[in-house]
Length: 255
Length: 200
Image (cartoon, rainbow over the protein chains, first blue to last red):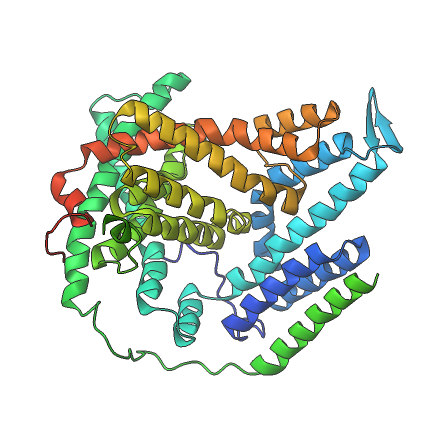
């Protein structure tokens, strides 16, 4: 299960913050960068997010996550830099191609926003165990059935991935080609996926019977197996976040 | 009466158990597409199958949870597209209920419709969050060419989504359709809301 999540187990002040406060932070951090259109302000927010990541001792782990979005960022810079509709002033030229100032400035702004989005989610994802987040949501009134769904996804996927390894080997042993031309590779898609899908769907039948027996549909209040961890400074942090958010909106409306 | 069943919020335990399995299938589809180096995403087979089996609402929930989990485990950018996946689930669920998965021809039409609607939903998201690009090389190349010819941003962005989404969704729906047809009856009946069978 642990290899599914990006959670990094460290002991830091950020790890000890209430998951819901972090969720609020993610929301406010991202919307603020989209509300404000000022490069410096967005850069400031990004810097702040990075500082939180460093406080949480997880800054190194965010870099590969940003790397996953690299293709999107690269295409934003190239496409907007060269072709943005408002292009007028040439910033510099590489051979016959000119990079325009307007497009480049917009590309820079979007890149900052995208990196901030990934980093802000990183604050939540890297420093919060999914179990803790779901538990906090359950205590806020999320249906326990959805809590089950969210957590069981994280357990089922590694199982299914392990199963696919077996099936790929079995099909190869029967002489199926998984390499070669595109049509060849495409043809092997269904024989690989089919058995896994069928297997996991038939398994749902047994799993639902097992859950029914254990009172999945029971009515009445649920109790919690684990004591709720006490998170400190939740309230002041949330108030500070909301004040910041209001300030960003007011500033945007005024200017 | 039938309509009410389609939108029923009273999910059976089987439907709840289907959701994680469907998210897993989405994940595997993407994994296999990567392993076989196919030029498509094929990351919605589970969503489409869940909609075919258990109706639009379950499909939509699968879509949202899929992108939340994907955001948590691989790339936070996918949180943005949770709405697209939800709409895919809804459209497939409704059209499957109306009988658009009775043969291959209809399934292709369903795939085209889903692709178009997915593009329509994705375009505003792409424009809002990244001024129109999608991060897919072919789509973005088209986007850039159209912008260079001074076409409007939204049209270029829509074309960008269309060339990526439509083939991908047609393939996704066709594969799901083939799998759906091959499912044993006792699995299909487990989610059947129309019958008079006493459910689990």
